Each structure stands twice: as C-alpha cells, then as structure tokens.
Length: 498
Image 1 (cartoon, rainbow, N blue to C red):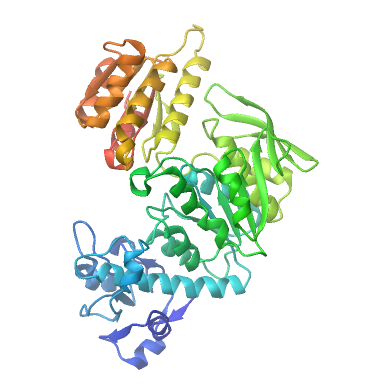
Image 2 (cartoon, helix red, strand yellow; image 1 turned 90 degrees about the vertical axis):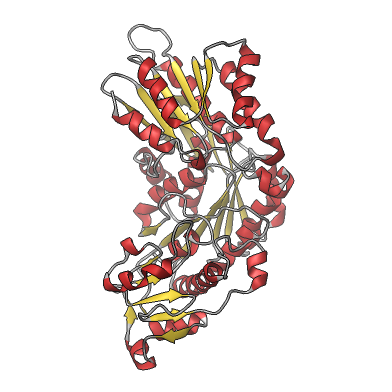
C-alpha cells in the first residue's frame, strides 16, 4: 500500500481514533501490509478486525499490534491503537455488496471502511499510471487471472490476487497490495447477487474489463442465466469510454455485452476469423495441454500452453488480448504463455506419482460448465497417454457436490453423471449423501446401465479408502467439487501417496 498516516486513514474511512492521540496518529505511517489474519501481520502494517465463522478479529487486535501492526481498523475500541469506524450504511449492506456482516454490524462496518480505503488508494495510483484489469465470468476467472499475470509480467510489476480473492473482502485487500511501483493490478470480480460486480468496480474502476462466459454458477442465488448475464455485464458497463472491454465472442451472452459498454470492444474467439484475436489449428497433447496458432490482426504465433484442458484456450486468448492492448508483442505473449503453468492451488493441477498414477487436482471449485471441462480433460488424457501398451488408461472421476444451483441441483448433477458415462470414464465415485449426489450416481447408472462402475460413498475418507484399495499402476484420477465439499485435502493426499 502507499504510505499513509493513521490520521489520513481515519479521515478517508470516517473513523475515530482510539487509544492513540491525534498527534501520534499524524506522525505514524502505515508502511507494511493490510491484513485480516493476525498471523500475517507485518511490521508497520494495519490489522483488520473482522468477525469470522469461529472467531472475532477484535479478539486478536492486541496480538496483531504486538506482532508489528501500528494500528487496528475496528468497529469498537480494542485497547490498542485503533481507527474505530461507524456502523455501515444499511443500504450498502442490503444491496449484497457486503456479505460478511455479523449480528451487530461490525463486519459490515470494517468492510465498508476497507472499501473506502482501497478506493482512495486506487484513485491515487491510477493518477500515477496504474492500469487496472478486471476479470469476471461464471468459470475460469482464477485461471485467466494467473495467465494474465504471466503475460503482463514482462511489461512491468504486476499485482494479482492469490487464489480466488474476488469478493468484498479479497477485492479491496488485493487493491491495497499495490504500491507506486505497481504497473498492472489484476482483479477477479465474483458475484452472488446483482450489483456485486458494480460495487467492486466502483472501488477500483478498471480501464480494461474481461468477460469470459456466462454459465450456471450460483444459479440458485440468481434464479436464471439471464440474471447472471445481466450481473456479469456490470463489468463492461463500468469501463469508461477511454478503456477496453475484452469479450469472449464464442459465448452469445457475452458477445451481446458489446452493446452495453461505452468502451472499445475487442472480441476473442476460438476459430473465428471475425474476431480481433482468435485461434486456429488447436490440438491437445497427451496431458490435454493445448497448442494452437494465435492470430491478432495480420500477426500470428504458435502457442503451447503449460496448463491443462481445451477450455484454457479461451482463457489464454483473453489474456493475450489484454497483453496486446498493454503493449506486448505477439512473440512476447507466446513466450509468456508457454511458461505459465498452474499457479493457484487445486485448479487443474496435474501430477504423476511414482507408481504411474496421474492425479488431476481440480477440487477448489465446481459448477456444471467447469465440471464438464474437467471430465473432458480426464477422458482425453486417458485415451491419449496410453503408453507402450496402447490401451486406454483406466480413468476415475471422484466428484463432489456442485453448490448453489438451487432448483436445478438435481437436474445438473444427474446431467454430470450421464456425461461421465458418455465420455467413457471407467469409474465414477460420487462423494456425499444428499439428493443431488444420489442423482449424479443414478444418472450414470441409467445412462450406461452401470453397476459397480458408479458408486456413491458418504464422505472423502470413504472415497480415499476405496481409491487406496483399487487404484492400479497407470490409472488417472480427476478430483473435482465445489470447495465446500472438502475434496481438496483428499486430492492432496492422493497425489502424495503411491
């Protein structure tokens, strides 16, 4: 973060000083990072006292100051130097912009103050030349963010969120990682309600917006794909006329957003010469890593991605389009993409154990679109990496629940079970006991008249026990579910064994 005094921060967020004098606050600068985890506090930093599911950050304020924080941003006095903020605007809370409110509003109050601080810092840095890139979509945001960081790195200093820091806490927290040395700030923008993306864009207005796709993630929250599309369109609407919007023209709902922005539009497409940036000659290697020819106007380059799955081509095209807008050459983009392997944990991370078992750890999150993409990659690897025998490798899909699908949960889980059969996946392990998971297992059975090929187990421990008993040399395993299903630890253990 840029260096600010505690007095300046208090003025920005509209807070009152507690356990520190005005003179001390005017003389004390924040020189470290802003943290909401007291274990991550750095010397000279600012600690955010947020309530959590199991604990309240206010209880850790003294420890954070002892660890080096110069003050705490809090909703009440905490016995150490603090900036105490007033209750959050109830209108902002009810809009859905603030998701972590506690019973007394302290969470919303601190988050509202955090947003104000991030907005002020972003405005100053943009005036100094910072370029902000916002990315949204129903799936692929984190993978695209990682690719963007790779292609922009040769052009300057890049700040991007770790993992999926893309909500009303992670978004401003990422903004505050930027300094006067930062050239590019990449921000993921997620939403659970209409208005969420607009609220995030207001904190740090992007000069470049990227919309990847409109799918069915969070369908239970939004109610329809049309509402999801309208919410995603909040990003291109937020980009000013001086900016650029990158749209995936292969998704009709995204392509239609060209009519909803004042910014210049750059279209990307897999195989369409009508786009501004497009691909041809796509092939996958034995581990489903794409190769293709990148076209940008009359320039071309051969691209070999280090990430897995054909769906990564669209992500790479969007990243390439951004980099080209920021001054990269096509050759620089090709070199950067070739070295851009998986960065964020549990997202199509492929590893092969000593016993020849390949594990695809894609357990961080899941929705119907990303689940089908993962299954396609699994099926491709099983066919193409057969080895000396020439026989297709035995494939396992270990799948957990896809959350937040609302009334469509049964239908969508049934569809995934059937899809696994159509791809000729050898074994399906359905993890969980709810109705949706039963629908997935029964969908597979009905689609392929399967017997023991599709089995439902109660939890991750049961799935791991089954895999330990039955995995054989050369098998390939996909582990995928929404994060709440808790299959990430299973995938980690599975990859380490053997």
